[in-house]
Length: 355
Image 1 (cartoon, rainbow, N blue to C red):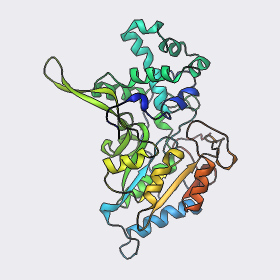
Image 2: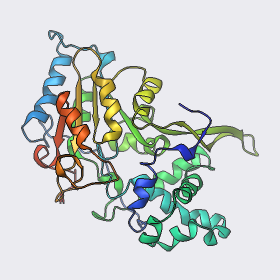
Image 3: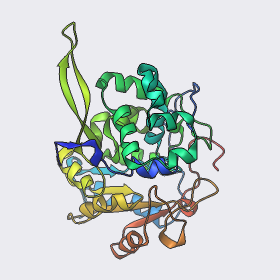
Image 4: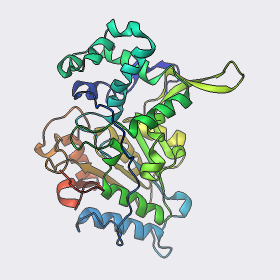
């Protein structure tokens, strides 16, 4: 926690990795927003039979059976989930990065001088190669301009508008449609057995809170993410409001995840789910507690229905959501469960036409 740190110290996974691989701007067109997908009659109906599904079912049974030596009282039933790459699609670029780029035209409309100023001029061009060559300093300018300087309420309205209109380039659907159905079922199954589910993400906390309840069934107060500062003030008519400030309160990635869990939740999770090296410390923190524990990592190994990247187990290299061989070896050593998208999931999304 470094409360006086500028946003220039923000986790580069939200910034640099995504910008370096960004496609053309999403292009906005109004679309119906995603809804919570109902589970099937049986628990985890979108999962194939196998060690991953069995581990979830066994964990829930043992922690909720009062006759079990692994019983966990309801107040201790805490489960944490990374978002990008664990709950929804993160390739080829983080969705929040696309949001930042999509906001640039609106900023230029408010301040026309920016149209001739870099890096805004390059972003407005829509030239993928030129955008990918922008320096880190230039990318930080875009971050500052698009994520700060507005009221919290205005930001909330703007993100709500974006998530119901911006579409992913591959599936041509709103980003909030690209939620992994098997993971929705895990969260619903845990909640039906007395667990509280939290999102613990390196993405922007305010950004995810806008849609978390509608999409995941997780209320905003149960979202822990990278958090910027706010400043209290009054409008001309005396109405109090908060302005988003370019100061970093919590970088919720890697070691920042257990730090954020302690700060915002106050209890060590019993179960944690991630997909990348950025989730390592959260799973390690979860695993050293006593009693029953469940640590799981989603491996993206299905290029046909979603994407394939690692580089663990010989999968392609990536700068977005990397799952290293070192992390894979640690998972095997500590009996963490590695979920294979290709082998463990019957379906990827709640809509038809996976792939």
